[in-house]
Image (cartoon, rainbow, N blue to C red; front, side, top):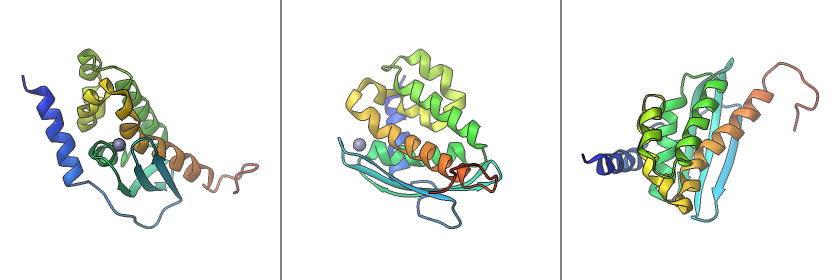
Length: 158
Ligand code: ZN
């Protein structure tokens, strides 16, 4: 079975043809995240429709893993509610902590779709942050977009 090379093809494909790339309007929150250990950067915007993620737009630079990860994440989170998207992010984090255990990847395959291709990255501690950067940016941006929603709460500004 050529699973490893199939995974690499998926990652390279997202890197070469990123899905949803570019910064778009409207958006409720924009964040900039960096992964200094590798030099990866991403600027990411979230647009909510109610509690649903209507758009995630981004620009980034860095290694193929970091850039492919944003693209695979884009496919996974559009149309999901913020809690569902963050739950998917937690599954991705679980995959990144799996140390290459194929059983974990198999279990998360349906949930993570193309993002399961990053399973091999979990064997390389130095690269895990590359793959997780986009998900941390999404978590940050959705939390800010969420708090900027009309429901008035104390200290929601800034
Ligand atoms: Zn990187």
